[in-house]
Image 1 (cartoon, rainbow, N blue to C red):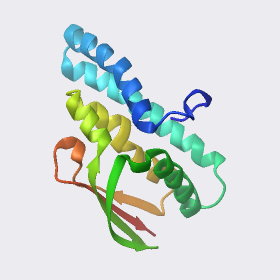
Image 2 (tube, one colour):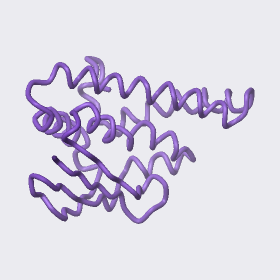
Image 3 (cartoon, rainbow, N blue to C red):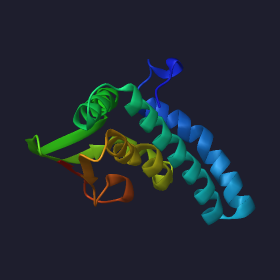
Image 4 (cartoon, rainbow, N blue to C red):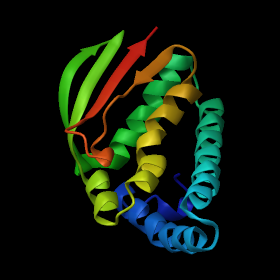
Length: 159
């Protein structure tokens, strides 16, 4: 989530800072109430916050669903920069498909031993953006580097 305070840091550095705060909290909660309960509480709260953030951003973004999705996705790509390696498959208007072959976010969270946290903080943003843009945008992703797969599949269908 971009704020006035973090416009000048990379998304990777932002993710690292978030993880540095959240992992000790998660570990303390896991010790106290168990991993399943701690993950359910923290991951649920993060998902709700991020979903709400992108819904509110969509409301402030001009245009219809396609324009909103394009604007939000473009802003995200700009912030990601060279931290992912993309293999483009199809760039047609109705079917945008690509694979991410390398992801420094996945590498970071896997090194920290927290790929599920990384998935909630990073991978699910694409779903929140697609949902916030409206019913014309559908994202299907069956594999992610964060979970140890060979690539992240992005299969957008634009209705």
